[in-house]
Figure 1 (cartoon, rainbow, N blue to C red):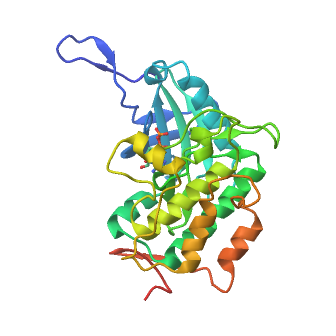
Figure 2 (figure 1 turned 90 degrees about the vertical axis):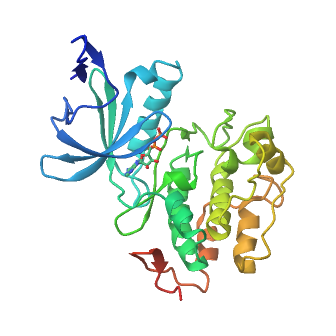
Amino acid sequence: MTDRIRNSTTNQPHHTNEPPVQIKARKTRQEYTRRGLLGEGGFAKCYAVVDLKENLYAAKVVWKESLSKNPKNKPKLLSEIKIHKLMDHPNIVRFHEAFEDDAFVYLILEHCPNKTLLEMNKFRKRLTEPEVRFFLCQILDACRYMHRASVIHRDLKLANLLLSEDMKVKIGDFGLATQLQDASERKKTICGTPNYIAPEVLFDKTGHSYEVDIWSVGVIVYTLLFGKPPFQTKGNVEDIYRKIKEHKYDFPSNISVSSDAKDLINYMLTQQPASAQHRPSAKPFLLQRLHANKTTNVCTTNKTGFRSNTDS
Ligand code: ADP
């Protein structure tokens, strides 16, 4: 169904980039009713939708006209759908179905009602170590799953870590993800978000692989604990890239963070992805290190934001 409205002055139909209120998937015959806007990304709008049984989902809606602006957009969206569809993990946004009508492509996804870790970090400024450990275990578990399925996410950042009803992390947005054909394949596309990009993506002409996700997780942990990304500058993107190249970051002395946490960040932010002293992978060993002598915390929300039950 095309979503056209009549122009009140000319009475000519024209396209709008607002999807219809009633959305129908032709093949599966599922019907959804559109509710409020959840958020907007680079080329999609995300709405809450309900099916006929009142089950709630998030519908990521892409306007086809915006896809035609760049010939790379369509294959990118098809790749996002193909890879996201493969994912089946409790810490990855569940993919229900994808379909299209004349004007839009719809991705029906698990609804994550508690926004993202970006909003939480802005609201709280800094999270405690038990809270960060709670999230980190889930993020690494999902990374381990993705990497085993030969998938590199390539855009792990706070804005792509959504939060479920019970405050579990759900990795979303597979728009930059790629699936390797074999373990030795190296990817050469420069992509990601400046603050989170691993040095080899920017500077290694031989390409990059799974390790880029672990670098981004290191940036995420630093940002959650210190309230700002490690390579952030007041300057432009080139300044961020220079700091990444020179491996220039430090731990603010006025913020009390344990040496264990700093060691872990340093480890994940190892400059060389694979060398004698290489960046860790999301294998059980890294997870074990996190669990060692520490319980994983059960976390709850309250009116002032997120608190873990071991947080004083
Ligand atoms: P884009 O690929 O265009 O960047 P995103 O996938 O990042 O789009 O989605 C845009 C915004 O929509 C997100 O920042 C988030 O606020 C919201 N959003 C995306 N997916 C969900 C979801 N599953 N549940 C709730 N909100 C979502």
